[in-house]
Length: 158
Figure (cartoon, rainbow, N blue to C red):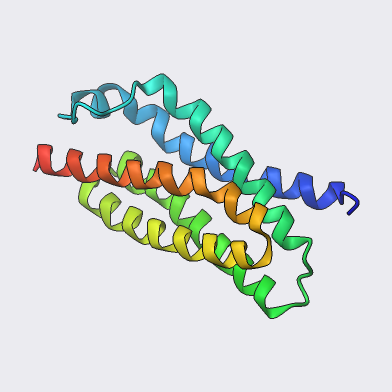
């Protein structure tokens, strides 16, 4: 299979742009708001989030590209791309809700919806390309962890 560089670069741009948009709301809220919150003992250091997300967005982009290359004329591919788009939007919206608006519980609601949409996306991708599905597994695991963190922060600060 030859590489369609325009599609691959678009996929990378799309995913990284979602990350940059989310970071726009995250960075300003880290100090003092997020720093002032009570957090569970399993909270990772702040420096870990940026490299983790950059890596996850790259994996997501490659997964998206692999599915896209299966042919957008197929209904299964279009459905998988639609669900991917939904989860990417929910991902970006979470940063806006949690960090931008400082709404911890609303962030929790969003991240639960995000987690469900990632699970559905992972299954749809897996059916089209096992590699694409596998590329989403670290993202699913990370968001599972982030959901537990969001829940704990909500409980500790309610």
